[in-house]
Image 1 (cartoon, one colour):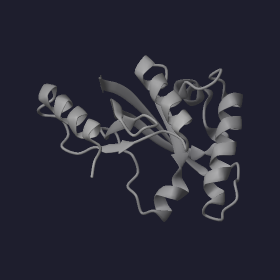
Image 2 (cartoon, one colour; image 1 turned 60 degrees about the horizontal axis):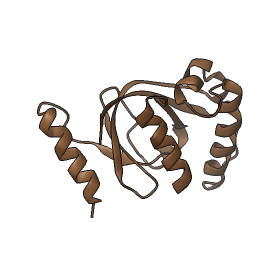
Image 3 (cartoon, helix red, strand yellow; image 1 turned 135 degrees about the vertical axis):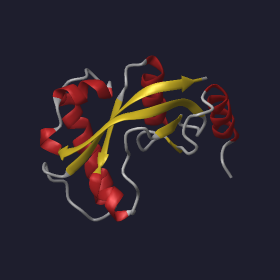
Image 4 (cartoon, rainbow, N blue to C red; image 1 turned 90 degrees about the vertical axis):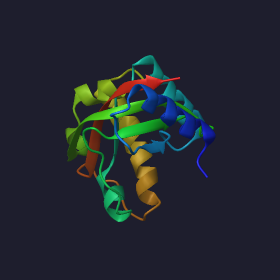
Length: 152
């Protein structure tokens, strides 16, 4: 059963966007309540306009890659809907070729590429361990940019 806040946010969004997309994905950033809350707040502030994920996980889970025009409902650490974003760009690059601009747009820490690399290497290592794979600086990373289109 979907969280009621998700359904309600989607209904509210559709009222002002009747010709908008019919489907959406709902998810939280990161792997903890605290991280989900922190990153959702950065989206609401307009600081975070990008995210990244490991391409291999999409392949293994047979999930569709994000695409331009995809609408996502961002959840906080409690699973409540806090914002709706629309994907504006998707590129897949090796980890060691993620740009300083992308790191800055992710909005985390001091927004430098060094910070992004340190944090994401640790996060990606953890994700890869769960599927018995090792981190490699050439792993393909899905770099997604988005714009905030609705918030409570």
